[in-house]
Image (cartoon, rainbow, N blue to C red; front, side):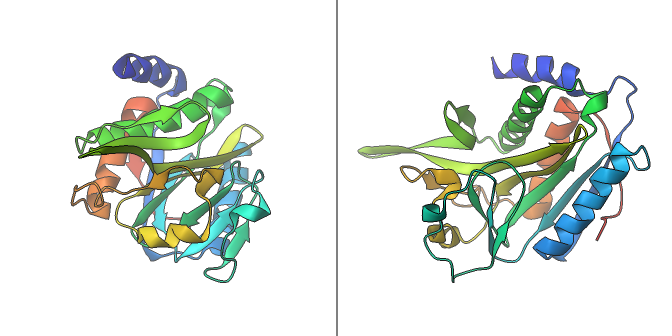
Length: 238
């Protein structure tokens, strides 16, 4: 079923003209406010036909972000890290070292103008990338993000490994996804991630997969090509 979904959604979300998406990776930690300014400027340029599409991979210093659906009660420790109010969809999430953030600036005018299909594509992109490491993952009805099932002697649970929060303006997307590679999972305790407190969070390393950010980037690139189309290396906007 997943392979069929990837094929179907991929054909719908890929550009008919085959134009590749620029793929940029920032080294070191990038400040959140500077990233948002650069991201919004690039999205506006794409909408105006003045710049190509871009996927921008980076790490942030430890911080919390609040989406448009966030509830104040889900911020459990407002003094622990900086809190940034943002216009993306979703609720509270954490960003920090060891977590790969991918800001996705795609022109949905060229990709079907279907926001639901776009979000499904983001989910399948992450699921496919995790599959490169042999990690089975999926989405869950009523829960945002990508989840993994875990079992041990006498116990089982589902943990979140990736978050999704996007905004679309003039049919150009921005904000994007975050994949937990090796962040400090204790940093999530200052919030109720995405408003869901009955489940935990995990990472590739926590699951016993000793992946590096570079390896995660390559898995993301391979899976992105299957869902959205070809990429070409580019420099980051910051």
